[in-house]
Image (cartoon, rainbow, N blue to C red; front, side):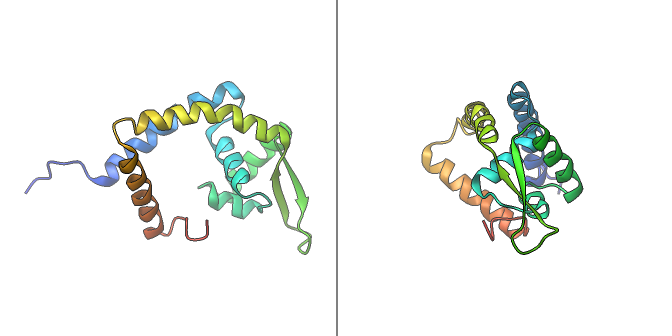
Length: 146
């Protein structure tokens, strides 16, 4: 029997691409890329992360994260300090300028998210978030240690 409804993976992929385009447009006027905004957001939630930790939490490879962190360092939005017990590990922290840049983007990102869930009531939005977190956990893609 032919499938009449699109696969869940297809719908999530379409949402991911549409959301990424909108985020790119929202953060660009503030001099950021979506990966940079994501990294700053992760650091706001939990600073003092190694490059590998930041990459995992930002859904990037460590190599890509190195490029993102280099750009954020050049803009003065993050700083790196040596790990207190592991001399080769550098821990990345948000600077006050990074917090300001992040806050400047938040309003636009809030509008995008509100538009995305605009047809859902508060209870449905909460259930959607819970369901998406569950999906992420079930694919071992995060939230277990968040």
